[in-house]
Each structure stands twice: as structure tokens, then as C-alpha cells.
Image (cartoon, rainbow, N blue to C red; front, side, top):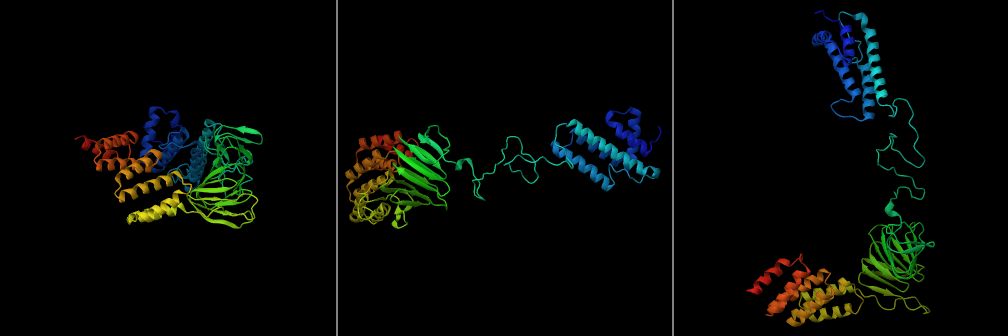
Length: 438
């Protein structure tokens, strides 16, 4: 078998992808096994062909394959390995320049073949990238986003450093409103205008981080920039997430300033359900410095000499805390006084349920079991959807069992299990039923 020279071996290696006769293949393998230079060339050429054919061990994207091939050609020309055939072949020094140019030609042909096979891909190299459409910001590498990923658009109305999202836009959550003579009733509808938003039967709106419930025959104006909600008529209930930016509700006679709370406002009064608010005159004078949860503040009728609260603000939450503390010390008299004062106010359902429960506990401390049972049942039936109602029903059942009224106790335990099948006292109620049946 004739021995091949390095030049002949590398020529046959370049033709290997299109097929070699068996004799040439064996001669090439014999030469490569004993020649380090041709072995390196064979490995580099095989790697390049694999890249072009998309058969690399790790699958690459079209853009990555292009960069890999260009990088390989560039690196080879600099490093003297692979495609740079300026190899020190001992017997053929005269072919040094010829092989270098030939290898580069092979690599260039492979790259050209790659572009032909990937017709339609973006060009690489010195071709300038197309500028993005107006209003669309691309990243520094100007690479287009993957399919299905939306680019953010600049918004001339946005303040620097504040990113706007779809949820920041005022929208209708439920009900029906009329804006600029157009009626909106579809949940999720965006309010293209926030001045003169009217509701005849009531509606719910999302205004920035505020959840606003419009009462019947209510009209408002909303300014997202100043975070001001002007109540032109009617009644609004507002729930604001806690944030560092204050929200102000404006009426003709007073302003309500809040950070994070839940409250209701009419032209004559403010009622706080959660958190606290401050009430000011339009000029900034303080009318109520700190209106706590469970409290209500009202204005005097129009035409009086001064704008002032009708009555002193009562901190009902504080009164309930004081009543609970007095009962813990078995001081029933002071506890009843605190509860009487608190229940004279307009309480929220949760506060009213707590006050009723404390009255039942006061009767229990005094040993009036029948009265305590009746008070517990009153809370249980009136506030059955609250945890206080569930607790009161279980307490009434236990009291009935303690008094020896087994029929009443069984009836109440069964009612508890039917009403609250997953209630917190379901296991205890079931155990009591079994014990009462014995």
C-alpha cells in the first residue's frame, strides 16, 4: 500500500464527507494514526463539519452556530492549529503557505455552505443591525426578543423611574358606570377618562392601588398623578393597600388623608373600618387627627357658624380592649361599662360580634349560665359567617352540656357539625356527641 504525504492526506480528508473509496480511506487512516499534524487537522475538520450539519453534541441555535464557526475560523488563523495549516511538516516545508491558504479556503467554503443552508437568517459580521421601531426599547445587544415575548413601550406620561403596568390603569371591576356619556358594564373595562365617573346602582373600581366601591347615585373624579379622589355626590368606600404614597379623598367641606386603610366617605361623615385616617378642612386645618378603626366622624349641618364634628370621636377598638382586659381580671362592672359605650356607636360586624361575645363571657363569670348560653347563641346566629359566630355556637353547646341539658347540647353540637363540617372544633363536637349518646 503506497504511503500518503501530508498534502495528499489532507486533500482526501477534505473530500471524506462526500465519500472515499475503501483503499483511500484505509491509506488516510494509516497516515493519520502516525502523523500528529494530520490527526489535529482531521479532528478540527470533523468538528467544523458537525457544526455546519447541526450534529454537535450540544444542540445550538442558528445564531450560536454562526458565531461558533466564525470564531473557529478566526481562532484557527491566529493559533496555528486546525484550519491554519502552516504546520511544520518535516518532509514538505515548501507547502507551508499553500496549505494555510487551502485550509482557510475550506473553512470559508463551509461557512458559505452554512449560510446557503440557513437562508433567511440574520447576517453576522459587519452588517449593521436594523434600528428598532419607534417607541420600542431593545437591550444593548439589539437582539430581537424570542417569539411571544412582548417588548415594553415607552410612555410619555410616565414619570422617570416609574414603570407603568396594565394594572395601574383605572378599570371597572363590577357594576355599571357612565364615563363621558358612555356606559361601561364589562368587568375589566378600562376607564379612558376618570373625570365625572358616575354610577346609578353602584359599582366597583380599581384606581391605582385603591379598591373603590361607589354607592348608588355616586359621581367621582380621579387624578392618578396627585392620587386625589373627589367625591362630587353620593358615597364611596375605599380600601387602600399600605404604601408610602398618600391618597386623599376630597369633599366640598373636608378632606380625608390615608396611607393604608379601609373606610367610607359621604359629604357629611367618615367611617373607618380598618387602620386610621386624618380629617382636614379644605384649607388644611385638622378636624380629626387620628380616626381609628370602628370609629365614625360627622360634620355639623350646613349653615352653622363653624365646621366641626357633631360629637366626640369614640375609639371603640380601645373600649373593646379595655373590656377584655377587665374581664380577664373578673371585673365585670367596668367591663360592662366599656361595652355599653362601645355598643352605642355604629360598629362593624366583627366589632359587634366581639362585643356580644364579651357580654356572654361577663354573664358566664357571674355564674349566669342560661343567660350566657342565650348571648352566645345570639352571636352565633347573627354572625354565623364570622369566626366569632362559629366560636359562640360551640361555646353555647358546651354550656348546655355543662348545665346538664343533654337534648339541647346534642342539638347544638349537631348544628355546629352541619354548619361547619371543617370547623376548628369539629373533632371536639363529634367527641361530645358520642359521650352524650352513652
